[in-house]
Length: 408
Image (tube, rainbow, N blue to C red):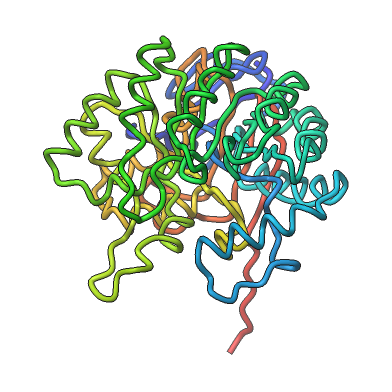
C-alpha cells in the first residue's frame, strides 16, 4: 500500500478502522490491516471523512473589502460596487486573491471546488484568463471546476453570448448565470441551456435568490432540463425563495426536482446576510430548506459562496464552518441530521458538481480529511482546526492548533 491510516473513526461506523490506499484510491477498509505501507498515519481515534467539497464559490470576487465599502450593506449596493470594482480587476490581482482562497481551502480539507468565473463586457475574459492557470497549478491539492458565469445579465448586455462562448472555448468547464439579474430571465435561461448543448457541458444557475415578489424561475429550469435531456447535469445555488413556500407547494416542487435530477445548494452565510431585509419583525431566515428537499429525494448540498466582499463581508472559506452554521439555522441537531449535514459538504456536494467515486468505500478516490474530533457531531459542533488533508492518496496539508496557558 502507498498509504495506510490506522485506528480512525469513520462516520456511521462503530469502533476504529484501518484504511489502505493504493494508486490514489481507497483499496481496503478493515478493522485491522496487516499489510505494510510506504507511509502510515496513526489516527489515534480521530475522525476520517471524505474530502470537503465547496460546490459554489467565487474566486474572482474574494477579498474585496480593501476596495469596496458597505454603506447600505444591501444586495443592490453589492452589485453596483462590485461591478465598479471589476473595471479595475487585472489578471495578476485576481490570481493573488484566488490563490489566497485556494491555499486556505486546501488547508481546510477542501479537495474539490466549483468556482463561478464572471464573464461580461465589463470584465471581459480577464477572470477566466486568470483562473485557468490556477486550475492546473493547484491540481495537486484541489480539483477545481470553472463555471463560466454571467452575473450581470445577458439580454441587457450586447456581446455577452459571444464572450461566454469564448470563455468555454478557452477551457471553462460549464456554464451558468443569474437570471434574476436579467430583465428577461426566461430568455437568459434558454440561452444558457443553448450554450450547454453547444458545448455538451453542465449548467449551474444562481436562481430564485431575491426576496421580492417575482415569480419562481425554477419551473422553467425544470422544464428545460427535462426537454433537453440534461437530467443530473444541473445545479442551482441560493434558491432562497423556496423557504417561503407552503409545505404542499414545496413538496410538489421537490418531487419535480428529484425527477429532473437537479441538485440544490444552500449558501447560508450569504443568504442569512442578504435576505429578508424588508422584514421589520419576526425576520425570516431566508435559507433554502434543503433538509426538506432531501427528504423528498432531491440531492442537496451546502457551500461558501463569497468570502469578505460586499455580498458576504465575513468568513474564511472553511466549508466545515458552513456546516456548523447550516446545522444551527435548519436545526440539524440529531445524530442523523448532523451526518446529513456532513454529507451535504462531502458526498452530496460532490454529486452536485458531477464528481463520482467520492466517499470512504473501497474504490473511491482517496480524497480524505482526518479531523481532531471523536464524532461527526463534534466535527459539526466545533469545526476543529487540526486537520490532515489527503488528496489522491498523498498528504497535501496539515494544520495543528497549538494552545499555551500560563501557569497560576
